[in-house]
Length: 443
Ligand code: HEC
Ligand code: HEC
Ligand code: HEC
Ligand code: HEC
Image (cartoon, rainbow, N blue to C red; front, side):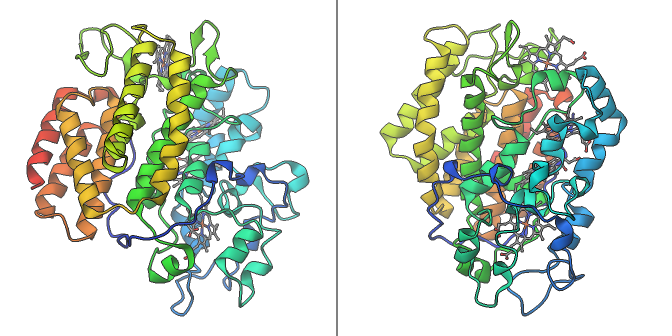
């Protein structure tokens, strides 16, 4: 169970401050939820459309999206192909599925694009994996109009193109498979059967996918400002919301006598008994099960920087209340989860409007380092999430030309990444030592 991302995700166009599409995206219909017709990847792939071998100079898009996707993006055939491998066979067998993994809706909903048969055009193939339409939406309603010479982005959206450039809609889309939602979800039971632990951070993953678009001046003119810090922040808030939704969803929150274990830190249970890790923090007692609070820990710093002081304190209080209640130290856990969950929609709306400044980035970065040195990331999931966050924030600062000693910082970041590479071998003390060294490279 190793994390597969690396630090190779710099080099993106830096962010401009400004406006974003003001979408009420929590209400955004995901591609698989719409009733429209899907025509299949083959319809996007012509060399005159998105299958050009190289990008076109006078076009406002790259036009080689299909080549990038089919050659290097794991969403293309690979996501589907893994359903034929030994591991998938074992998972399906261990779960007692009636059909093999590559025919099971349970698996296909995430490892491919799996709309109902009535919504599949003649050339649509599930074997294409997580295809263009899985993210950009069923294409029949917009395929013709989007190539008209005077088509605007707003027209395309009005015709049903999924708003992938809106940070909230994007986060909701990616999380629908990279965590799950009310319709599809990797449970602890599936992990026990052999499914890997899912690790995700929106901005890091958007870059390692790799991106098949360039958020240059032209992109921003058509689609609004691209602020990767905002994408990261919104991604954290929505991931935290999804986790709380699992706790609050009666269908997903229990598995026999136990609650659904995915909402907890995996290594709260899965580590050796001589490896004593508990330390006093966030109102939890020793020997009690701890929530996977990795996204909430990131949000703590985001909220501190972006919300007025009293709102930030209220947020911190609600998180503490939840931890205490989950640990049995007072209060009703479901009520605490409900109160915290209710506050997240407002936070998402504020973050989606925020233009993050260099000072914001620096404050969040030093805040994350300080939290880590105060022992807040002694759980693997928190350390892993903090590492991706620190890497992303350093990347944004560096692209703004605002990171002094970027070279030393990048080397320190590599060493930090090394400490979270393998969750089975994670040692909080080594992580904290690497974090301390990294902190010293940031003036
Ligand atoms: C909620 C979405 C979701 C569901 C449902 C799901 N998966 Fe996955 N699966 C993922 C994601 C996302 C990854 C990639 C994990 C990562 O790299 O972070 C993955 C990874 C895997 C891998 C490892 C892939 C590799 O490249 O090594 C296998 C094997 C796998 N899944 C099999 C299955 C099978 C079999 C089922 C059905 C029983 C299933 N999955 C159901 C989302 C899902
Ligand atoms: C896993 C989700 C995903 C898949 C699969 C996917 N895309 Fe994208 N695509 C995105 C995101 C996110 C963006 C960036 C936001 C935006 O520009 O709307 C994007 C942007 C684009 C753009 C806009 C570039 C610009 O400058 O405006 C095009 C064109 C595009 N994708 C075509 C495709 C094609 C063709 C395929 C299939 C071969 C595909 N995409 C598959 C998520 C995806
Ligand atoms: C329909 C489900 C689905 C959606 C939507 C989706 N993904 Fe994925 N993604 C997967 C699956 C399944 C895999 C695992 C492929 C494998 O390793 O076999 C994956 C793999 C990846 C990987 C490679 C991870 C690795 O371990 O190397 C990245 C990066 C990624 N996704 C980013 C994104 C981003 C960013 C978005 C949103 C724009 C997104 N995904 C949307 C299902 C999805
Ligand atoms: C509340 C404690 C608890 C938490 C939290 C927990 N697990 Fe488990 N896990 C168990 C128990 C109990 C079993 C079943 C006993 C066994 O097989 O060892 C198990 C079994 C497993 C197995 C199968 C082990 C085997 O020997 O076959 C895997 C894999 C696994 N868990 C992964 C995870 C992952 C990944 C997470 C975090 C998302 C997680 N667990 C969170 C308690 C937990």
